[in-house]
Amino acid sequence: MVLDGTWQEARKIYNKSSYLKELPKVKIEPSSTSIYQLRRNQKPNGLCTAECVAELLKAKGSVMAAEKLQARLADFVSNP
Image (cartoon, rainbow, N blue to C red):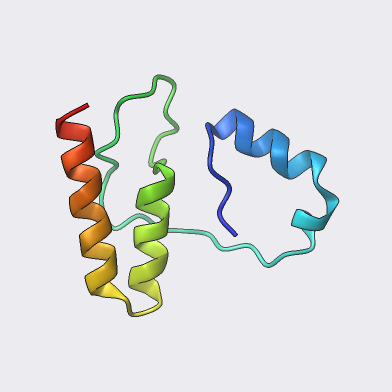
């Protein structure tokens, strides 16, 4: 499960949902800096949801799917 929202929204969702705290957690070490700059107040080394999913796909060996997702995100960011 991946929470989608701003950092503040995701934190609220997590803190209000006891069942989420029972799920395994994963720390993502970004392989590059975020290309998603459409929001203000980004966390240093923070990633958007799509970038997180791409990193998870890579970690699970689905490199092609990760690259497709990253390409779609790049298109979205360059043509808002």
